[in-house]
Image (tube, rainbow, N blue to C red; front, side, top):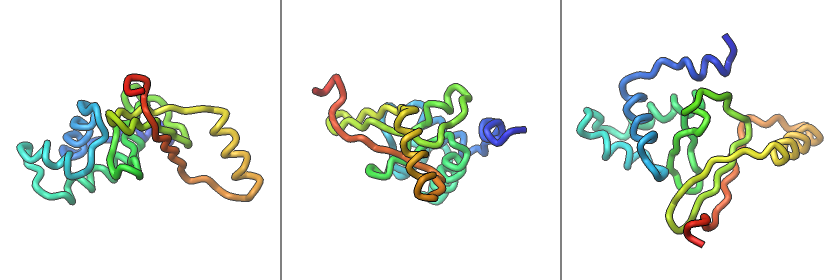
Length: 137
């Protein structure tokens, strides 16, 4: 089985399934504490439970962490079982909070080429672009 196949064959624990479900139904990025608030009625009581679930979901490529917002979103590839690219970019609307995940092969190629030329090995890259979405402009 390939590494990518293993990612999407991940057997989810109850807590991982609950956290993933909350992110699937959210229209906005959510902090771990926001996720916890939504899951208190399902038996989750401690932030550590949510953080452990998020760590595994991050590791499996099912969710992303938006560093600038300290929040989490569902990976758009996760919904369709697609292979997750190495370089992920997000458009983040500063007005409504909408997040759009996208990939640009030219940007990815440029970053990979630069890393190769400097001898740097890319482990992961997340690009966050902040501004206003078409609806808020």
